[in-house]
Image 1: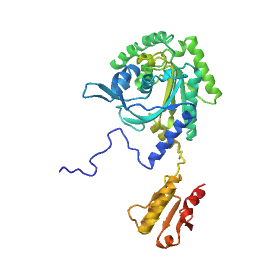
Image 2: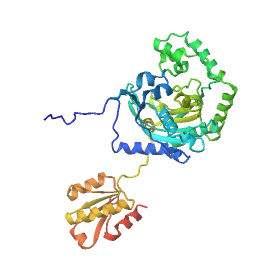
Image 3: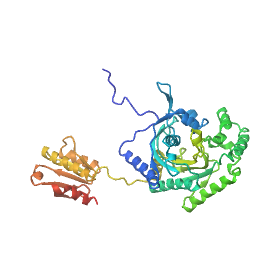
Image 4: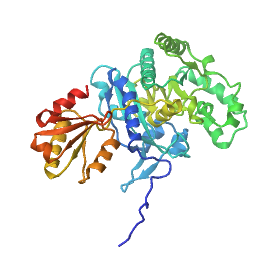
Length: 425
């Protein structure tokens, strides 16, 4: 029989495990990012972890690094080409179209999601090959108020966590009416620069992507590049100004960034990104924008839409950078310590009753002695311990010990649940 060393397997490079106690922070962040959406008419959607490759090559874009370099792809035994999802929008829109959600009632269809995404990138602090996001999509309506709503909801989510040192960058990418003229002007400018062959190919496929290049040697040459704001049609100018007005009225501070294009081909008009300067080079904590033509790109009808994705991992790092400690509920409020077999049965039943009454309770499993069991009670973070031996049972009581003050009082067995519910407030 083959034997393996204790640590034969480790998490794959660029991935991470979520384990207690850190996992409690991740769960709290996910909940906080999603909470404003649930209050605003967004319904939950969950899509498969993998999709047909063509969904992303068409929707995200052939010229993007995500499609050309970062997708995890696989071929099934039947020859189907699949990809682990590198982002959420294309999958959510595909699912909405497949289920005809856009035909079911009022538009927009408002959806939110949470899940893991996968990109083959060079791992570094804040950038993983497996990462977690909470996202939102509003499908089927062209309205600057919808763009503003989503941005406001993201800002409110960050603020609810106590995050303060983030910045909102905002831009407009125009639409199919005005972008062609800008594309031509930008291509003319970029063709005169000293760029590598991959970047030159990108100029011909989607020149706006070159503006998103993070390499300093490229960014230096982009000084003086044609500005999209100078080429916006009147309709796009009016639309963008309305978004800006709504954000300002809601007390949302933003910075206009004419070079902000994001990393995906499907964006039109409103584009935005949340930056946290405490994270070093991987400073983006979330972002999104309007994608009015994506539905048609993947075979659907015209459905102007807008959405965002916020990184759970990055948000946790941003909180740490600001020294924000979230107030997390105790995983265990009451810890039961039985002394003897008879007490084990009684306290196990009490723990079950407490849990059913909504009190987080745990039990000293494994037949621990009093000393070790009380150590476990303290490590659990519980506020109270229930201790009982033969004498207590004979008197029909258990000892209720406050682990903060050290006070201990007997409580009748049939009154334990109500007593603890009262004490926890």
